Image (cartoon, rainbow, N blue to C red; front, side, top):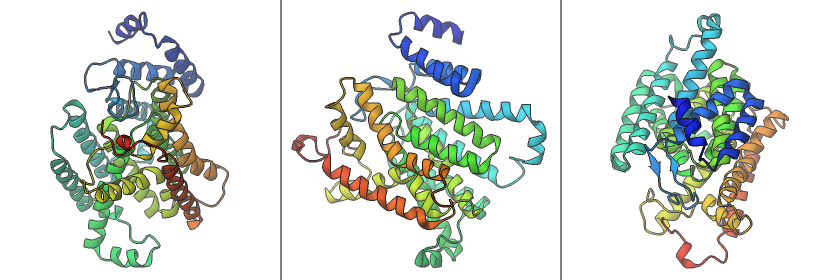
Length: 379
């Protein structure tokens, strides 16, 4: 039934060449599994549920599906279960179920379901209700998994506060909620959050080496290919909430295990965090709610510049997301592969500072000469 629907749609689908290219790339990089996953993503994109109108984010010009996050999570689950089935001895050696990490998995699933509700029925829950639900999810998780709270981050004043368990719990909860909101806010251009997610998943796989990290890297990599080439499937709230929670917990877990320094993780996830803080400050300065929507993010400003150079709206969209990814998380991935510094070093703070400076310079430059009607415009 699924295959028949895809074949029927392909007979009249103008994106046949796009699909052919994606299948070639997926096959070359991931074999037959990649081909099947791309077809699955294509089928998801054809569904009429959770569809976003074109131009909602001020960048996209085609009607797109918000079910990309669901597709990534399902793909991740299928790949993971398939790998475990083919290597059952590994399951007994590295249990995913008999320790407190399962509470993190539950939190990821619950946050993804919360996002899915918004994808299917937009504004069903007010921002206040969503915030309260996230607070309950993370409060419960930290109660059952207190080891995930960091004991020290190398910042004297902050380390003093973290030495008090209650304060450490509060700060960790604020971080988790803020991070997933930052990821959600940054998901506005093809290849932006999917690209950052792939870079992070690749690094986590290099230093984790488990089937779970391999499955996450593959699912994010294949989604990046589909998202950049077609622009018809994006993460949606289910994807940004779910992946945002996963990456935040991965960061805390690996930091507590001594694998990554806070500076390295800050550089890896610099764009969503910087853009989130800048957006809050900007909106407060304009007398608006810090969580009110607008299209004055850096990726919106940069996209307007790319529109002047590319005739294709899709190319301008994807160029926006990929350029930001390559200049931030892509640099960190390359630096880790080339071993600029150990990933436990605080020298990565220099990369993070460079990312902050670059963000400010581009944000300022892309705002020059704009008509007042485009500043903070909501679409």
